Image 1 (spheres, rainbow, N blue to C red):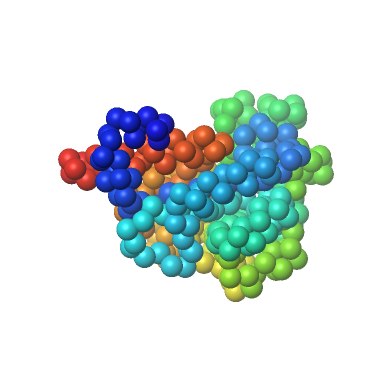
Image 2 (image 1 turned 135 degrees about the vertical axis):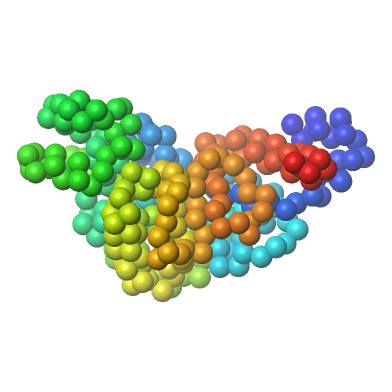
Amino acid sequence: MKNFLKSKIGNCYKFFFDYHETLTVFLFHEVTDNPSNYQKRDKIFHRKKEFIDIISWIENNYNIINPNKFHNSKKKNALITFDDGFKGIFDFAIPHLIKKKISSISFLNFRPIIKQEPNIVATVQFLRDNNLNFMNFMKENNLGENVHLEITPNLFKSFIFNNKKIDLDQIIIDQGKIVDYETLKNFSDNEYVLFGNHMYEHWNSAKLSDEEFEYYFKKNNYELLNFSNNINFYAFPFGILRKNFSNNFCPERLFVFNNGVNYNYNEKILDRIYIRNVKDVKDIFYYNILRSKIKKKFNL
Ligand SMILES: [Zn+2]
């Protein structure tokens, strides 16, 4: 792609590729050579070698920023983020970044971490595929295949009330391990590691009542305050924006997920992208340089 462009635009090549003013926020979930069923099903893992290659490419082609230092530089910037606190991120991915002096933010849900129980997404997906009572419950409540996006705390409580014998250990195996509290503590004074808010449990925040949203957000914030490396950034679970906030809800930055690049990274709401491999990163890189150039030229 790069050579193709070079041949087409000739001397303008340098002009095109010198233009940098964007922020690309990369989203990862788990880095492991032994993915769980859930990680394979939802395609939320990278193999270690692939992660190393992706990071090298990002490092060579972007200015990777420290999340504490957002500032307007005329560079093509990148931010590395991890969601959901999977174990391999802390066993492998973050130690790899620390060695390279690269900062990252991990957006955490503290309920699964503290209780060492599966998160709500892995739980309802497992029940959807394996539990007859839950299948009936879904029918009765008109819950579709994407039950993890539709389930609410009250609905789930009503199911658990009548189905107390759920094998959480089996669901954890299906999900894959989440980091434990002690391991998190070991990273809390590292200058390259930051922890952000992903809500106390991984509910779809657009489905919660105002009270529920405030409760789960604040409960997680309260836990984050036990870590000196907490940052007042909030990543919406599933990247789905909740439109109504109360005045008490005031993170410095909000992260959504529409697979887009940010052309003004002073915006409060920032988009993130999920890439599968190095080829994806390259495609996004060249596509967005051209797009930002076109935007600027035509004032789009
Ligand atoms: Zn998440």
